[in-house]
Length: 209
Image 1 (cartoon, rainbow, N blue to C red):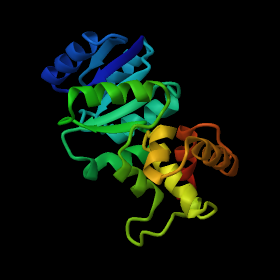
Image 2 (cartoon, helix red, strand yellow):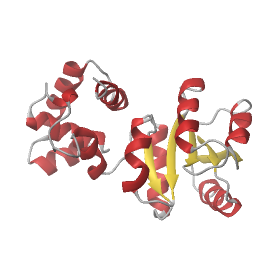
Image 3 (cartoon, one colour):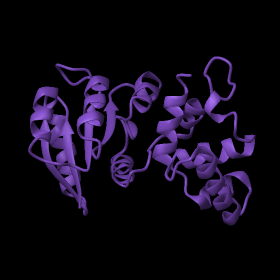
Image 4 (cartoon, rainbow, N blue to C red):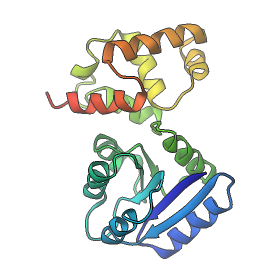
């Protein structure tokens, strides 16, 4: 059972998301909050697997609330969402530690898939966002973090980080699944991580140097 806490200042949104998730097998909305103060009061009493956090929630902005959750409740995954498109907030929220970003215009099945993936400790991002994480927007040159990788390893990494399965990566790059598995093991070894979340977190940290 995936336990979800919804943090949004719009009652209709909270009710709508709760109805969808409570009607879906394997999900349970354990609580909801309309402000960040209320959110952290609730987190003292319940331990959700995923917090769905609205970017523009009152009192403390979504990024600041996200960072506080990461610091005080490191086992809780945060899925950010907003009425704004991915271009506006997604990059900054992922860099701040979110496991994914959704637009409020997303289809119901897409939202359910995102929560499920995030609950498993996986990133939920689009291919476009994965590429923006991997490359400097201005120069389109690989970030320092990626310079130790071959161009093919970067391609594989971007697809894996965007949530693609080995089979999908193989099809997209015209490789076989065994080769993708080899690339994945090589990436983990080179970057000294054992999962994709840690890999992206390390990437974000190394971007500061």
